[in-house]
Length: 266
Ligand code: G
Ligand code: MN
Image (tube, rainbow, N blue to C red; front, side, top):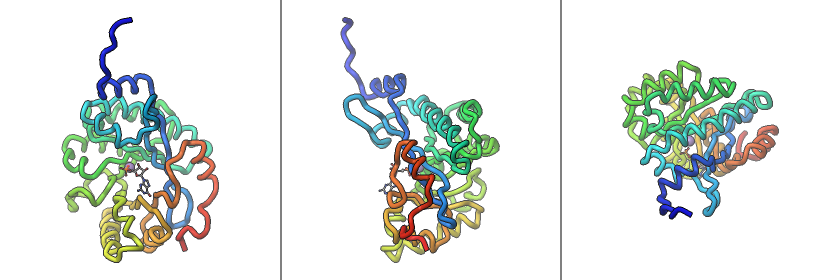
């Protein structure tokens, strides 16, 4: 047997990508106005042979530092597009949101690669949403703007993720090729509990509305937070109170039935 080279974290991740050791979980997103299910956010997990199921925060930073986010991002998008194509028959009104790294979007040919994958899968481009983190996208705006514009023109929707944690140029929000803002989870935690949070979320929602953007509030962990989202007229809500990230078959069952009464919605 040839001597085995010691596995570096980077080498291990590269091998995992080659072997396809990644699976998706999907967390439901609620349409607050009519209590219907609007869609899901796709969240990647690494099925590590020794360490079990790993969350993105345990490997995405390394993937971004090493550039492995480019092949990993393609792998994830491939899984998500395939799932979305299946759901286009059984759950035709559902959108599927997936997190995209700015490192991935800044890579030459990124928009064409994404468009190709969507087209090859046969899914409807309008059913796909890409979530890009506010702080990262604002720092790299000049590098990724063209890719975002091409994707928006193709019909994919773009959301700014973790909104309220970075430093957006509020004046420029309306110029960006985006459909909506996902308000960072830390705000949702105070909704319905901390009186100081309500006006902040209201201000973000007003700002979004002024620019024709929808608002998703994520991190909804109880009925009070959901009532707050409802009272502020935010369009979409996501969080453990509504549903955990689950494998596709579990999510299909969940999306087939409307939200239970007593959830915090009037
Ligand atoms: O960065 P992004 O907003 O994409 O991260 C979403 C992450 O937040 C996922 O890992 C998801 O599991 C987690 N999450 C989803 N809903 C909740 C929630 O209600 N509370 C908390 N604490 N985390 C959540
Ligand atoms: Mn996200």
